[in-house]
Length: 83
Image (cartoon, rainbow, N blue to C red; front, side, top):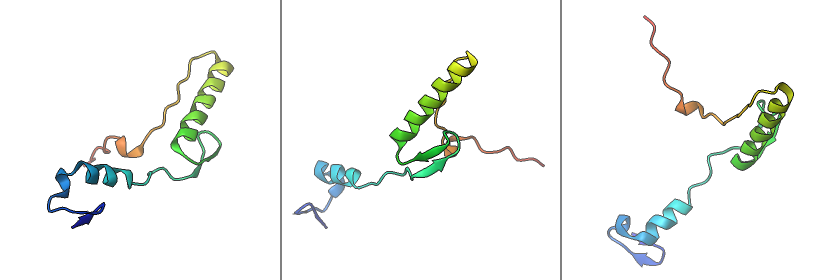
């Protein structure tokens, strides 16, 4: 197996191979129109910044402290089975 200019039989133990492999994974965030913030967001940083702006505006408008946080739908517990 040829990796970063060297032949390895066990690339899992090579620190250079592991770092190189980790760096190649693309971001899973897709640019999209987000209805929660009411605008297009291009990356996760922009999304969290917009959520913070929206929570600040909500706090000022209502006088109640709001703290909007991104929610990953994959983190939700599974729906209960109903018989």
